[in-house]
Amino acid sequence: MVAPDQLTPRQILSVRCPVCLALPREKCTLSTGKPCLKTHQDRRLFAAKMARSENFGQATVRVVKHATSRTLSILFPPR
Image 1 (cartoon, helix red, strand yellow):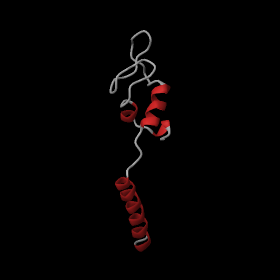
Image 2 (tube, one colour; image 1 turned 180 degrees about the vertical axis):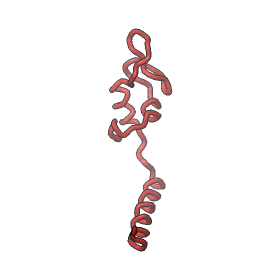
Image 3 (cartoon, helix red, strand yellow; image 1 turned 135 degrees about the vertical axis):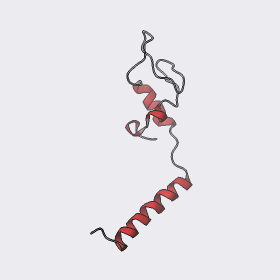
Image 4 (tube, helix red, strand yellow; image 1 turned 180 degrees about the horizontal axis):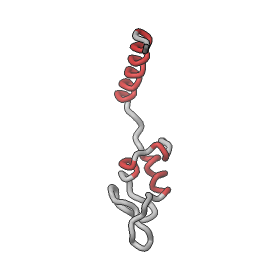
């Protein structure tokens, strides 16, 4: 599960809002029918549960990038 504060707006809007029943890619609405300035907290929590964790390929690329950047900084220290 991803922390709700680490989600991007695109990830939050990719799920249906359980409060106002806004469809994916639609902004949340108030009970008066006007759009909310923020998404509902329940929608963020639901999106955090539904967020896909990185797959094996993405994890490998992240590890290689990190190792390479450390190795290059050791070989060529900043002046």
